[in-house]
Length: 129
Image (cartoon, rainbow, N blue to C red; front, top):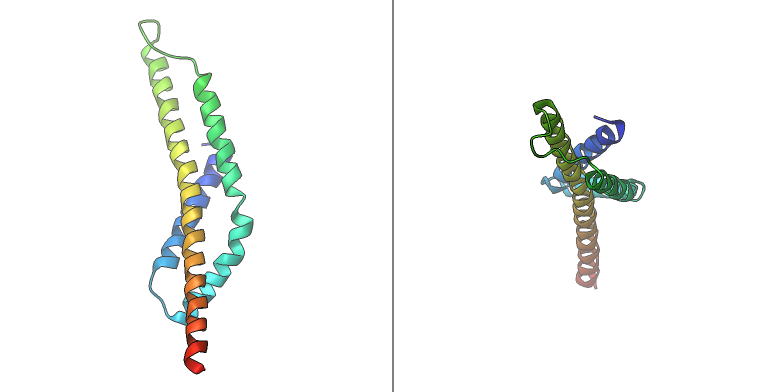
């Protein structure tokens, strides 16, 4: 596995862990600390979107220019290598899509939580008046 796919795999695993951490029930003070920390990390983590998009374009380009191995011309080893490259490309495409989707989920969860906090503050001000 090339270095960019290893990096993308680790990023997807980290994003999944963060998404799970955000959705687990926890005390209000801890939850607000976690959400504020993740909100600070989200902007620098935005690099994953263009990185994954570039990798998807690379997969598409390689798929369009891949030598086809069909018919009686190919040996069994060539056919296996061709199928293995197709499976790798599919796995890598799923990784790219998962990275983008998980980033979006984390962004929306943290944004919703901040909106809930803001609404609770407004409600508390109205009750105090």
